[in-house]
Image (tube, rainbow, N blue to C red; front, side):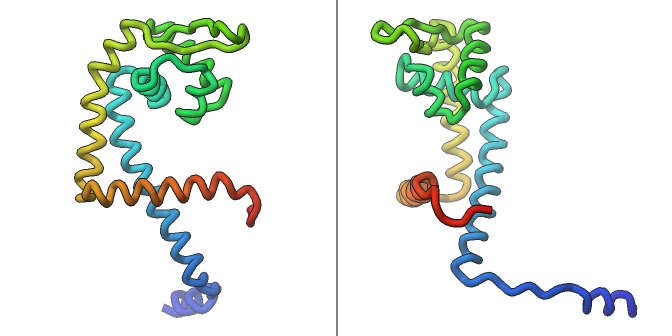
Length: 169
């Protein structure tokens, strides 16, 4: 018993963060946990079709936006320039995506769905969208709350992206 009380007395008391910092830390943890939980559910749905989440992202953006320059696809799905080349190569080897020449810039290449890629994404996207709707709906967020949360998170992301100054660890 003496060990417990002596151990307790050696625990260093740290000052509590101010309310603003405590709220920001809590928001960060909750945001990361929510993102991880939703991502796990959605990724399981995608990998069932033999695609990585990034490969699915490429198919999805090309399905909704049509042929795009590789750099545009890269920015949309948030991978590196080397990563986008690797991923498009993998999808091309599966017969799902093709590269097309850019008529105005010989250095640039477009990525486009092949007929097979279009058939695949048309088949699997509805279930993917339904799963996301189910996961978000399970949280009992109304459409208005979803719009508000989207707006708040967009503002948070834009602010974090724009603010290169500030405190760095």
